[in-house]
Amino acid sequence: MRLFARLSTSLKILIVLSLALLPLGMIASLASLETASANRTNREAAARLLATDSAERFNLMVDRTAGILHGAQREGATGCLHASGTIGGGTAVALFDAFGKPLCATGKMPVILPSRPNTVTPIVTIAPDGQSLRLITSTMELPGFAVAVLPRNFVTAATHPHALDGSYSLHASDDAGHVLTMATIESMPIGRETLAAQPVASNQLRITMSVASPPLSANEILLTLLPILMWVAGAAIGWLVVDRLILRPLESMQEAIDTYRLTGRFVPPPLTTPAFEIRTLGRAFQLAAQTITRHEADLEDGLARQTRLTREVHHRVKNNLQVVASLLNIHARGAPTPEAADAYATIQRRVDALALVHRSHYAELEVNHGIALRPLIGEIAANLRGSLQSGIKPPAITLQIGLFHANQDVAVSVAFLLVEVIETAMTRLPGTSIAITLEAVPEKPDRARLAVRSPALDRDVAPIDSQFELFERVIGGLSRQLRAPLERDDAQGLVAIEISVMTEPTGA
Image (cartoon, rainbow, N blue to C red; front, side):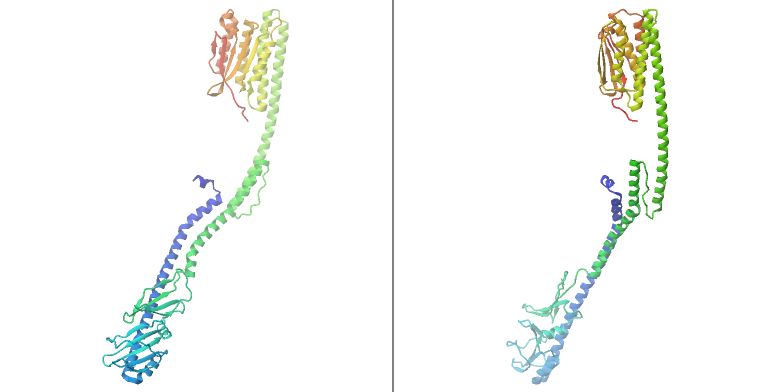
């Protein structure tokens, strides 16, 4: 079935039509063969009738010749000439007395003659040279016997059946192996059949007839092949009609559709098929292509307007975030106390992280494959190191970030989490080392593990104040925002969490 499904439609139709018409063709062919067999049987029966007719003619010739010879015996010495003329055909006749002495003779007689037969049944033999037939007869009333030598031509004419010359062969044979050929076949077609021998002359001789009988005549061959030709013609015509009227126009439609798919312009093919439905399909697809083209143009215009609006909103948000960052910077410079300046700096760091995520999110909208976490984390770390006041030793930050992308919600939470963790580590233990890693989670292609290690994150490295307690509450809330449990290890100074990522960019 899989092989049949991979075939072309035209070839499938040809196979189906051939299989559908094959039983009818086989039935018609079998009927023709049965008719041919019956005709052949009839020809064989007719040939047997011809053989029987030849045998009867041979027996009639023998009986007639014997009767004439009996009459010649009654006439005596003058009967030979009269009997020869009556039999005809150049037959030689001789009469003998009871002691075998010739009384009269016409023509050439055999040198050795038998003695008087002991039966009134004529004795028929074939000459050794196969050119004549000898008949010896006698009667109970008269002494002696008569002999007639019948030439082959005479025997042939007397036994000729009602058939065309050259269409059969006829032979007479005796027990001694002598054969008298009376007719031969001129041409020997395929299918020659030899009939059984017919006994003649009171079983003294046998006549064998061979009739030229072909297995099939020209008409029978035509009738036998005609159903097969009709089967082939029917399948071919059906395939041709379907191929020309349906499949070829559909192929033209397919080419036009492929051209439309590549160029966006539908050119209807010239459909000259008489199939009204296919022409209607072509017009319907042309109207559908025009409608789709018009809708695509409208969508392109709407998308262009939406892109312009998105860019405008992005620029407005970016400008507002810059304004907020500038105001925080101004207020931090004029802060009356160091504590107020630190508060302004803390707020400014978070605004900067939010601006970074927004900028990355806008890049995501441009290329539509998510926010790249490696450059985002690297820039957050660099901004945090640069935001320290002069005189404070900056931390040593190392990054080991894989190539991962995330959506905006995950990226914002990750940015705020990193700001909280790195800021806490910098303020608790100035000049500390901070290692940030982002690695894939085994057997979870859509998850990655974000980990931050620093001695400053150990509870025992510095006193626990209100700022550290606030830090723990904030990162706990961010872990709930990221929908994953937060891992803490005070001995290693570890804060880790699993986040949802996209390992490969996704298209629109």
